[in-house]
Amino acid sequence: MQCPNCQAECNESKICPACKIDTVIYTGTVRLSDKLYNKGLSKLNSGDLTQGIEILNRSVSVNKNNIPARNLLGLALFEVGYVGDAFKHWVVSQSFQKEDNPATGYLEQARKNIRALEALNDATVKYNQALIYIKQKSDDLAIIQLKRAVELNPRFVSALNLLALCYLIQNSREKAAAAAERVLAVDIQNVIALNYLSIINPARTKHETRKGEVGNKGSTKSVSSPYRGINIQEKKARNFRFDIILALVIGAVCTFAIMYIMFYPAIDRQHENQLQAYRTSLNEAENARIADAEVHIAELAEKDSHIQAQEGLLEQWEAQYERADRIIRFMQADNLFRDDQLLEAIERLDVIDMEGLPRDLVDRDIEIRENAYPRLGTQFVNEGLSAFNTGDYYKALVDLELALRFMPPTAARRAEFLLALGTLYARDEARHPEARVLLEELVAEFPNHRPQHTGSLLDSLTDED
Image 1: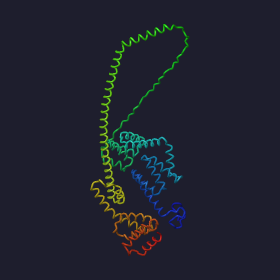
Image 2 (image 1 turned 90 degrees about the vertical axis):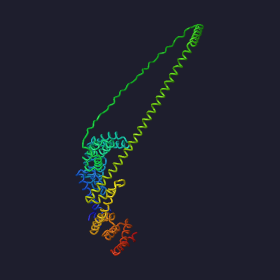
Image 3 (image 1 turned 135 degrees about the vertical axis):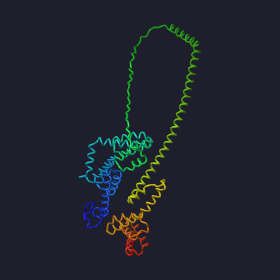
């Protein structure tokens, strides 16, 4: 027998001597990953990209070496605009398998189309900028960025959904519906887009948007101040008479004194009038400034009140959207229950907060659980015991642990269930405490059910602890 992981000979042992893995668990893991891959491929073929991506993520999380699942996940992520995540999966895939790997072709083709990649990257950048604007409550700026992102990548699902939300915030219901319909053209079961359409339910009309460009013109001027040098020439000393110069200076001083006495009062009055005019002008300007400031303060207070009212309205919208989303997800879980997909229905109900939902939905949740739990418990008990009896311990462990979650204490075949699950836990030393709880419960409830085998298992647990 060869190890499914490293192809080494195992000599009929379930533990590979080379890579030390449990071949039974490994084989079950590979089968589960392949099953999820096929299911994800089916979802993608039907146009349900959201569910397909979710299932393929589960497939590669179960088996990271599942090359086809990882490559297909990269293609699906690339399709909805997550280019970076797609490249990440292709690079990881290429690291696992270098030869005959389609991921190599995908990466090579991407490198040959640099301009297209730059456009997709620009779309992602504008989407992230739009998120920042929305956090700042600038939905107009966010819409501008999202429109540009969608122009660069028309299949960018997240950008289209966010654009629909922005239109809803602005109460542009028809535009929001058009954006949501574009999402559904790419991903027919997109939960967010379906949620928006179920809330809006608008007439299917399309509106064209006009685009405009605003250009700014500017001019520059250069100012030159030419410097001109001044030539200074020496002057020769000349002879002059001191008495004449002194007489001229005395005459000038007397003339200035007479003029000062005559004209100073008039000049002083003129200066005083000018100063008073300046003071009056300054007071008027100060009063006008104070009045203008008061008007601006009143306007700011009114705008702040309007903003607070809009924020309160936005919070109400968000609460309504969140409640409507929970109702939609509950109805989807109810539909799964009606289609007899019991486990999927319970898993969806477990992640829905029922607080604040209508009373009839809360009652319906209780009714679904009361109906589904016994049926699921019986189903997984029967499937788990069947797998245990045939030696498929991996499947038996999965099914019996699910039965432990759903099975009521008084269910049929409970003794067989306790013994089988206790035996499986006893095989794993780390789970001996859980095995002891189950086996002691078996002895207490069913003392005549294979007492020797149960006692032997309990003794082995005591020796190993």
